[in-house]
Length: 340
Image 1 (cartoon, rainbow, N blue to C red):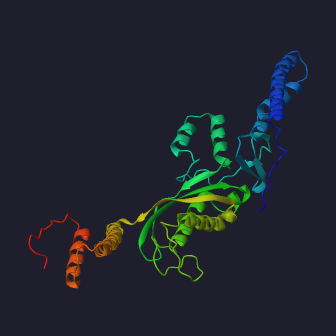
Image 2 (image 1 turned 120 degrees about the horizontal axis):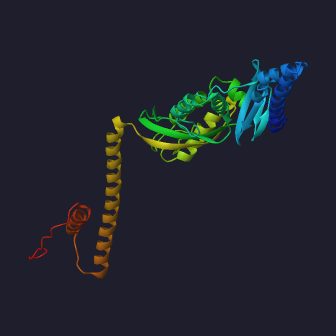
């Protein structure tokens, strides 16, 4: 279904003034018509004025007010008439009704009004106030909105359960598709976000892992959820966009807002990370200690301070490595006797 934008309907103010003027004329007609009847004149003016006072309010039903970045989808006896877009004071067929199936859907996103506030305001409003609240609920916002979906527990490509949450920036670009192609475009978007997130996360490991292909080219790479968040977010955005194209929605951006191991394995993974960090630190310490021992032996040999045989060199290397690689400060033992 193609969207039809009604651009020639900004006649709200002239219709309002004309209808109000006719109401005032009808009131005056009732006064003068009543005086004419009391004098034995014709009652036609009185009858016409009374009829207009009874039905003259009907044109007011066709008056529509829109603020910037708002739209109103109109149907006439079940047929799509068009969409009002842009700020202005419009007049349409009073029999037209506005359609927005997602008006009462309140997701965890910006732009949605608290349902309790709407109910309270409607319960204490007059008839005109009720009509205004109903019209406001039927309007479709064209602003950029943010959807914060609930965190999901998903297994990554290695089978580790991961909790992840995303924020999606989106907006409606085709009101006809959003209203008529899907039952509820807000719920549809939320469901597609969940599905797309699950499909993309299962391709990546949480952290860099060997022999894992995340691009689909058959070559192992270093992609991961933690290290390649920008790439993952871009793929999630493209995946969601391909799914909501038919609903007339545009996905502007998707961002990862929360990423962590699931609680049941978080402690184990923390120990694993600590062990990896300890191993890396030990490796660095050993490399530095070996370099220092080599430098000490070279300096002693070059300066001729002392001549050591292979057995003494081995003992010296062993003592230096113990001192340099130990976790605690060394307690030196002074040899007061002969070296040999």
